[in-house]
Length: 157
Image 1 (cartoon, rainbow, N blue to C red):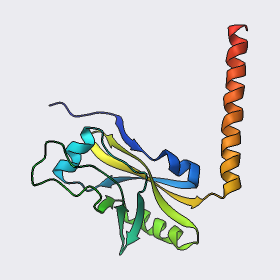
Image 2 (cartoon, one colour; image 1 turned 180 degrees about the horizontal axis):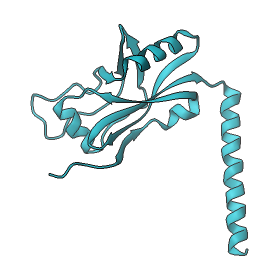
Image 3 (cartoon, rainbow, N blue to C red; image 1 turned 30 degrees about the vertical axis):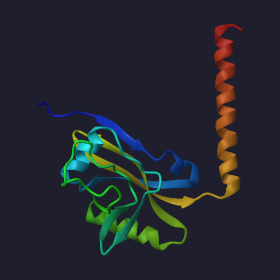
């Protein structure tokens, strides 16, 4: 079997960019069991309620839902188990320093395969206030309207 190349997205936490101001983004490897990898290759995962923590110098992904493998047997994994993330020691130390400041959290943004290896994109983020969310929506809608007007002008209408 040929080695997989490139990046293939499995799951994305789209709500994270809406609910948080994203500061620093890190790519981390993830420790998985065999049936978890097979379930991910089927494209099944959910990061909606997931978050990451630093405990005793190790980063852990909590609340990520990787459903049981459909053809698995008694060796299937627990769908919401805590999974270890693989990061450089310096990156973990920097993340730990940043998390001590108030209001900062570690949020997973996406789960994907990079050259055949499962990776998680995690970010240091601070929560948005309600008015920040309204500003995000207003900016997105104004950009959409400008794009529509430009497209209509280019079509000659």
